[in-house]
Amino acid sequence: MPAPYTSLRCSACGWIDKNSRESRAEFVCSSCGFACNADTNASINVAAGQGGIPRPRRSAGAGGVTTATSRSSAREPQPK
Image (cartoon, rainbow, N blue to C red; front, side):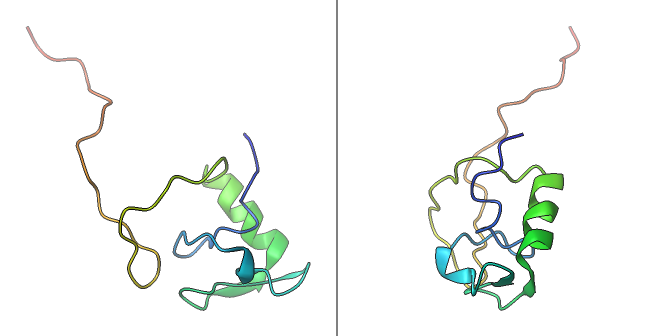
């Protein structure tokens, strides 16, 4: 799995901000205030499948929460 942005994404709220990296070793989310070791935060994101290029947010409120905008494109088999 690609790992870009995993060290910039908050594993608690999903907010992505380069200013959340206080230092090489410390991560403090600029949105929700979650704090932990930067490597630990990145590894949580990788394990949760949160790597890759970030998608643009339509309307991020406090904590970086976005709302669903449409139905899932993945469908289960339908009975005939």
